[in-house]
Amino acid sequence: MECEIPSVNSNIDEQKKYFEKCKTIAVVGCSPDDTKASNHVAEYLRDVGYKMIPIYPKGETILGQKAYRSLSHIDEPVDMVVVFRKPAALTAIADAVIARGDVKVYWTQLGLVNNAAAQKVKEAGIDVVQNYCAMVEHKAIFG
Image (cartoon, rainbow, N blue to C red; front, side):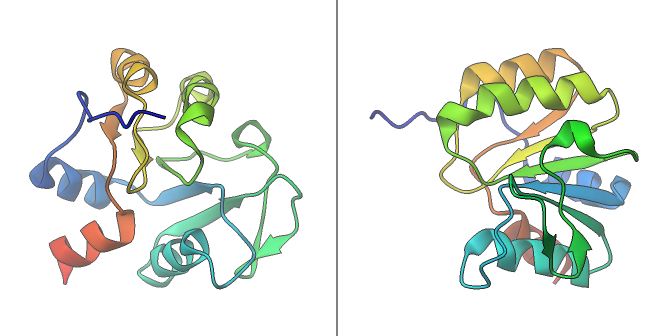
């Protein structure tokens, strides 16, 4: 598998604005396993004051929050979607993000790039961050 280099992306100043304007963050691929990165990032985002909504195919409760099976099952506004899924899944997730109509930022975690999906999201008027860890960037920006 060939690695993509992000052709659609945001810089640190834009990322700061995204964190400042967003209140609710859905974490797609959030694991109930507390040894997984997605769990750590979701916990961090929750602990620094964001309403964190876990997306996990089995539902359940993760980090004390109701987990939804997909983005389409969430019945409240979502400002940012942080994705922990393989690049091949990003096209379907991008379509779900666009279909919601309320997402302001589509963020794929470190190592996750799908330029076609990112371009589609960008063309729909949604800001894009690819190949960055939301937790690491938030800590770097806000300390």
